[in-house]
Image (tube, rainbow, N blue to C red):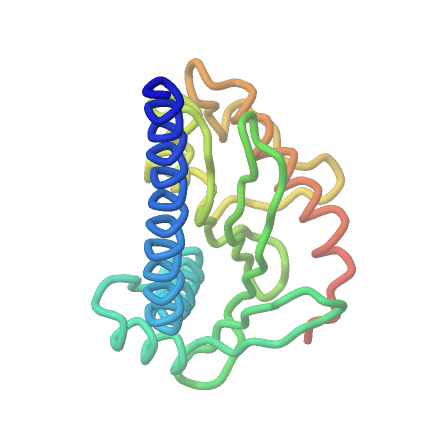
Length: 202
């Protein structure tokens, strides 16, 4: 009889533990869900500011400052439109003349998606710059595509729609990260040859 009571007690304790864990999970899950819902508007605003900062940087414009400064600078110089489901950002000078366009790009890297913005001149003949907003490449190797030294070599680079970019005299691949370097060029070449060539720009 004593053994039966002891066994029943163990089962009871086991059931209490399971119930406690379930209740605890529900409580923490509710707290996390509530926190996420509360912070979601702020998260969305931060994501929008990050995208605006990236577009400004691709054009080579001042991308420093707080959220308000970034938003004001973006709104005063950049206009957004959509063509064939493609977001196009137009950069205007103080006289209202178009100085360039920026478009988002996305493609496969070595370990994940590489996403960013490419800016080109109004005549579609020169790359004004590029910036990355997402990449999961190896830190210290492929992850170095986000370093200024790699990105700046694209700035003011002549576009060749026929042959596309290639590493050589004008562009240097990242040492030890050949696959990531080639992936970036493949993404950009595809964008330039297929997407930008079909733009309807004034």
